[in-house]
Length: 336
Ligand code: ATP
Ligand code: MG
Image 1 (cartoon, rainbow, N blue to C red):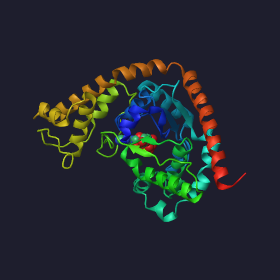
Image 2: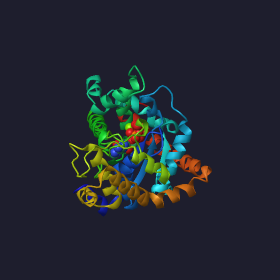
Image 3: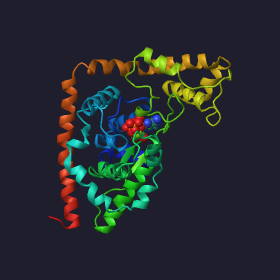
Image 4: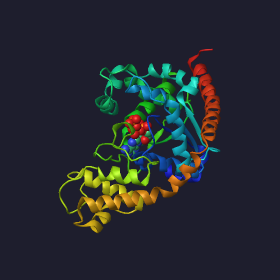
């Protein structure tokens, strides 16, 4: 059966895991790339696990900057976007020891050559702040397999950069099941949105750590300033041509997503109004679309204790699930 149909018919037969690094606030790339899908799945009745990937912050930098503060702010963004803390399990890597322990048997299931071929890892090495590449950079896709498989998630709503990692997870699930003659792990499926790679204000992948992102929690003035600074071109006639005019196309896509329209229609309306008119249209569309989310976010931000309580409850639930899976893994491997 097709996944969407199966989710509709029996949401409780599925489980979602996905997550974010606590490296900064969530942005429009997260929102249209994965967050909306997470919330749609949750609202359809699928159980949602959200990992705040604090150990994976160290893939591309020496030290994590204010990890606890960033983690709380991710919870804030989740709740503002519609994650229901009564139903969803939100936790950090560092609070769930048994999850991390799965990394060791999983590492034995992949070759060094396979790890070295991962195109997302290569791209991240190119943008890394470190002069040397750490072992964690090469192995974190295997850690992600532990994130997904500890709770036996079968659906993973992600952006396009995560597809190679999902392949690694599927390989690990399959090899573990084959090697230990068990049916313990599902082979999870990636769920892409209609915007699997939203560009940032410089035309490259919008990323928290690349200075090109529009945060969900930005003010309307900040949003206007960031969009004013976006890379476009000198052609006054606005048309949707992602290959030859990536900057203009990215902005058109953003307005179209916010207004649930086709980017060609947005372009036609702007006509020869040039980049200034385009940017004004996009700013208005983004600010309008995010207004209710930002209002909820401002209310939730007054209670930091609540954000920490959500994490504490999520961590307790994730530990129970991870301990049970680790017991099953040990049994399958013949350990005590
Ligand atoms: P960092 O720069 O610190 O790596 P990031 O912006 O890449 O931050 P992540 O925490 O690495 O964010 O990614 C979390 C999730 O959001 C992943 O599923 C990823 O695919 C998705 N995502 C991130 N950026 C985008 C984007 N520009 N378009 C679509 N999806 C995205
Ligand atoms: Mg990233």
